[in-house]
Each structure stands twice: as structure tokens, then as C-alpha cells.
Length: 169
Image (cartoon, rainbow, N blue to C red; front, side, top):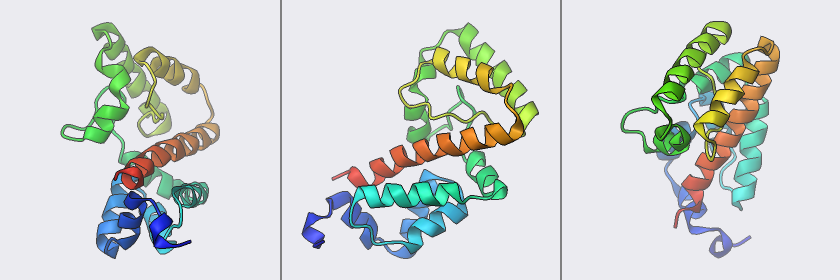
């Protein structure tokens, strides 16, 4: 494949100096192991190749790597101040009622107590009610089942964030 057929955003990512590319990847996902795997596989011919590499890296993360990735995410309903990505992704909670926000806070705390980390869901396009219902449903999972759900949700979030990174012109 010639460089002229590579989308401009992906070509820019492929050409980034290693530290800058690592930083961009680490902003998408806080797992160092994930970022290093994606960095090592550059250059990518297509965005789909990058997403496939992301999925493969996500599947191989250890429990410790997953914990590191999860730690990079704020609780639902409390996006990181000054972080447009978390604010955009959690838009469904922005207009939520005070009652729903208070309920989410309680559910987040109960979830965190049970599993030892924040409730993680690919919030993009979801309403506050859908996120509340998901945490209610998932709080009864075994830790092993929940870890795999979190891995899947992280994979979805990573794909959305990578698309933003490489599909910008």
C-alpha cells in the first residue's frame, strides 16, 4: 500500500516520533502494555489494522494491565476536569437529573467497593438511565465475569479514541 492511500490522520500518527506516539496512545488508554504493543506494530496501513492491533493487545492484558487502564478513567457522572474526551464520552450524564446523578454516585461507590475500581462502560451514545441500569445489572457479576466485561468495554472505548486520533484530517 502506498503512503498516498493511507488516511492523513493515520499517516500523521505513523510518522510521529516514538515518544509523541506513545503519549497519544497512552491518552487513549492508560495501559502502558497496550500502548507499547500498538507502538511496536507501527506503521499501520489502515485504521482497521490499528483497531485490530488494539483488540489483540486488549485481549492479552493481564489483570494488572487492566487495572492500570481502568485507573485512567474517571467515575461515570464525574468526567475529568479539563478533559474533553471524558466530558464528550459521558455526555449522557450531563443533562441527568440531580436524583439520577445522586443515584449514580451511590451505585459507583457500591460498585467500587465490590470490585475495587470504577464502573467502566463505553458511555458514548448512552443516556444516564442506560448507564445506571448497566451498573445495577453488572454489580451482581462475579469479579471474573466483570473483568471480562470491563475488558470488552475498554476495547470499545479504545476504538472510539483511536478513531478520533487517526481519522482527523
